[in-house]
Image (cartoon, rainbow, N blue to C red; front, side, top):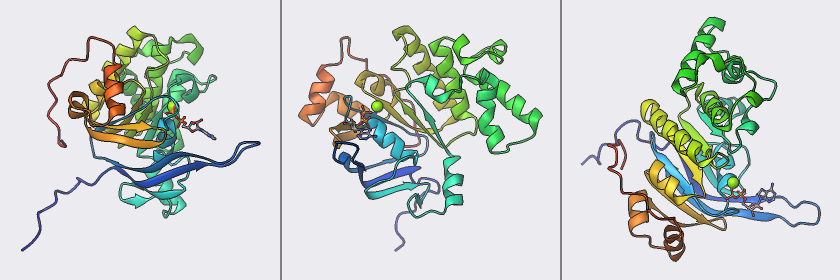
Length: 278
Ligand code: ADP
Ligand code: MG
């Protein structure tokens, strides 16, 4: 008897298998293991929330997922390829499918580049289309992140924090990544602007269908944005599951404390969107 038929294209976009990350010793400080035995996967079109207190290892895992820091143990598999075993050219190819949005939009934007230049740069680097096609794509991306065309020639310092983060998002989406790693993308913004940028993220994710690792110290934000959540503490996973379940019925004491600390009113249970994955 043949086994159950696996639908094509349901392989994870990314998986971590028993990942450990150790930062090398620095002057006067020994090596530090910032993540231990981390296993999870991100499926196509899924938003996975990575939540935990400051110092729990969220950024470390985001950087590992982006192939920016090596693992001491375990495997990181991107679109079926183990990053540690892939050739340089294959890694370069895989990187194209990945994008990263930082907490601080200033860190993703060159202060000397206009908005249009920043958004166009990944297209230039990868030689996508001719100049006309790239400029058309820039206009399309500006519109996608709801920025008016007149902002195209501005420099980052002439923009508000929220506008800068929209530009960073447009730049991240330029090459239509399969996976967007967003590291606390709204934490540095004013509360009212945070909500706008979260709305935008949610709409874009629905429209474009990219998978995402959405990192936040704020459980309420993750509840809203993600379908599944990984709860981290001191470099280890304490709990993982569908976000509704983890919120309604946390299994680990630590998660229970985090949920209890979410200010009232607790985020209302939203009707979940229909998804390819559950
Ligand atoms: P989070 O994003 O959850 O705040 P990080 O991943 O930034 O956590 O950091 C996790 C731990 O690793 C922290 O204790 C931090 O001090 C340590 N750490 C981060 N970067 C380095 C580094 N380059 N060298 C040594 N330790 C680091
Ligand atoms: Mg961080």
